[in-house]
Image (cartoon, rainbow, N blue to C red; front, side, top):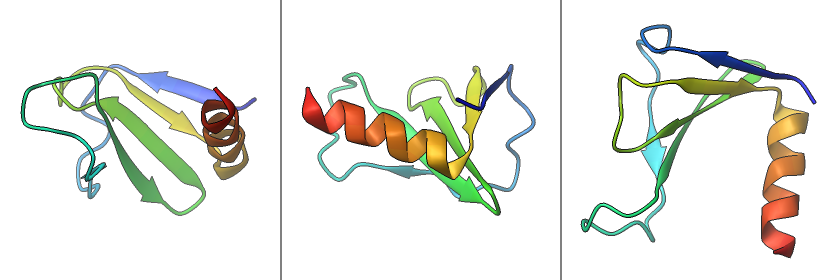
Length: 69
């Protein structure tokens, strides 16, 4: 799996999206942004925290695995 972790700051200019199922009570939520050839994932409560950068294939595998559980 091709995954890269950055410590923040390298995701400037990305358009982040949070699930419509995510409530305002501050639960465990992720935000996702895409750019050509990559999917970026971060904690919705820590915008300047670490960001995972995955290939589209790695993201698809993660989502498929999460859907099974």
